[in-house]
Each structure stands twice: as C-alpha cells, then as structure tokens.
Image (tube, rainbow over all chains, first blue to last red; front, side, top):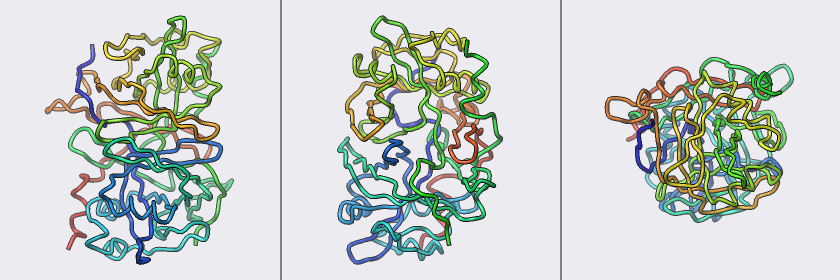
Length: 191
Length: 191
C-alpha cells in the first residue's frame, strides 16, 4: 500500500540541462532547467520548459534557437549557479568561468567547457501553465573528443553527467554503476 | 573543439518511465519510455512521448489517463522487458511478475511493486513527428513507505532509480554519489 504524497513534480530522474541563448543585445546567457528531455526520434527533438519570467524564455522566442549543454560532475557549481542567478543581473558565462562558442547551425551559444551539446532550432511552443514548453529540433550533437568511445559514440562513463533529485532536500547525484544492457536484460522474460 | 556527431537523440540523462494504461478490453498494460520528463510546475505535469504504433498510444487516447511508474535498480529486467515486448502479444504485468493496482484517481493501473508512481490525467497531445507527446497533469504522487525520508519526502537514495544511456552501447546505470545541494552549491559564484 503506497502513501499518497499529493500532486507534485518529483520524478526519477530529472536531467540537468544548461540552456544556452543569446539576449537581444547579443550577450550570451545560460540557465539551468530540469523540466525537459528528448520528445521525438524523427525528427530528433528535445523539450525544455521554462517560466515566462525568465530571460531565456524571451531569448528563445526572439531567436528561435537554443542549445542544451550537459555539465560533468566536476562542473556542478557552475551548473547550480546557472539555475540561481539571472542573466538580467549578471554575465553568467563570465561569473561561472565558462566560454560561449557561437553555434554554426543556430543562433545560440554553446558552453565550451561542458562535454556534450545539442544545437536546437525551435519548432513548437506549448503553453501548459506556469511553464511554457519549447520543442527544439536537434540539428547536431557535439561532444568533446575525450568523452567518445571506440566507435565514436559518447559514453556516459566519460561524460559523467549528474541528475537533480527534487525529492528529499533537493540535491545533485552522479551516475553510478552499470546495471545491464538495454533491449537485452529483459529477454529472459520473453516467451 | 568539439566533434560533430550529427542529429540524434542522446541526452544526459534519460529517465526510465514505465507507463501504465488500460486496454479497450480492460487488460492492464505497461510500456517503457525514456522520451519524457516533468514539463510544468503549476499544474504539475509530466510529458511522455510514444509512437502511434504502440498499444499504449491508443490506450492513452481512449482512456485519457496513464500512470508513470519508477522502477528500482533490482527491477531492471522487468523494466527492460516492458520496453521490448508488446501488450498485443503478451500480458506484460503477468510475464514480468508485476501486479496492477487500479488508480483511484484516473482510469489507469499502477505497478504495485515499483516504489514510486505518478497518476496522470491527459491534458494535451502534441504531434511532433514519429512520436506523439502526451502531457498529463499529475493528480497524485504515491510512494512506498520505505522510500520516504524523515520528513515524508521520497529519497532518491531509497528509490534507487536508474537511467538509460542511449550513447555507447545502450545500457542502464544506477544513481551514484551525492554531489551537493541544489540552489546552494552555486552560491559561491554569486556576487
């Protein structure tokens, strides 16, 4: 018998997505978002939700573009800062010691120091409630060479991303041990 | 200088969401989905995407409801199976040794053995491409008593969820060590 906790937004697991956008004056900005994830395979698309009050909300609507940058465990302080400060008050790239690199595909900045980036063209905007969901087509995935495996694929063991746990006291957790191959471990239950 | 990998659906991290629905004949079904996540805080909403070809797609449209069930590390085989088999060919609850419990709030079954469940009422359906995104309002979160912390909040260390890594060879990974508190670790960069 489970205990009812009421309506809420805890799920396992939340990603930590650092959204890169350009402001109206050309200044690059980042914000941290955990309400998001992949939402379509063809075309490859990612969804990320944000409040209308954020600077990034207006930036995405104005530019029609954003990047999703994945920080590594060692970059948790910069990522958390990106979710606390507003680009209206600070140059968050500079304060976090990060360097913007202009995407060659979309009008948005990538975070040079983070190991994995998605470059996205806005294709849909969904009004839900407090949050608006932006759906971006992923025009390219880019990764640091040193997080790639022998076949050129990004390896989670090398990216070393982390997750946000909204239950408990609100904390970040790394990725742990490998449990099994997908589309394989469950074969023993197939008749 | 990052390497271009082309368009694709890798992101860090993908959740492993087990979606519970009822079929037209009343049979409970589950499917595994990793294209999803929280998408709004007020009302609390979750998004999950699936292909039109799936049984669950039709079930959600017919019932206007679904549950999201989070498996624990020890349940990786059942979860993987839920993503491999089709409810058209098998009773996936039975084959995986799982028991359905009818939600008291929505017309969908919960997975009794999984430690954490969201009960959702369909509020939006977004056509994207190969995948359709369903947005559900979370009417309740339910958790096993033994995954709750001292203040009655679900604790990731006790839920022990796992993630799907789509890069590399496609595998599941547990959650690792705690890295720091959210909305706190980044304070040192605030001026």
